[in-house]
Length: 123
Image (cartoon, rainbow, N blue to C red; front, side):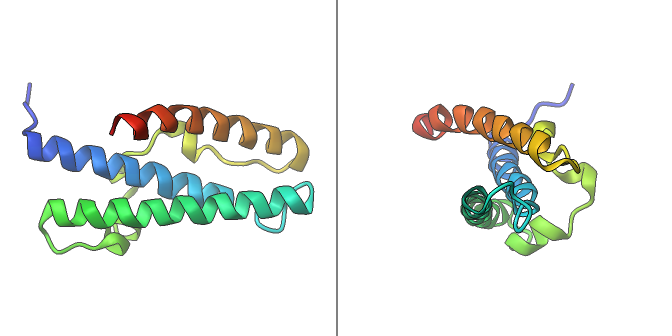
C-alpha cells in the first residue's frame, strides 16, 4: 500500500475540487439554448459560468502546487479521461428528453450543492 504525502494529498484534493466544478459546469453549459423555459435556460447558463470560474481558480492553484508549469488550461484540457478526479455523478449525460432530463439535472445540482455548502464552510 502506497502512502500519499501531505503535499500530494493536497494537490489531489484541489484537483478533485477543480475537476468537479469543471465537469458540472460543462454539463450545465449543454443546456444553453435547450432549457425548458427561458428563465431556467439563463439560470443554468449562469450557474455554469460560476462553476467554470471556480474550476479556473482551483486548477490554477493545482498547477502551482504541482510545480510542473501546467496552467489551468493544461489541467482542464490536456489530460486523458482517467486522469480526471471528478465525481461520476457530475459527468452523467443530460439525455435527450428535455423535461424529464431537466428534473435529473436539477436533482444532480441539488445533491452537489448540498455537499458543497458544508464543504466550503469547513475549508
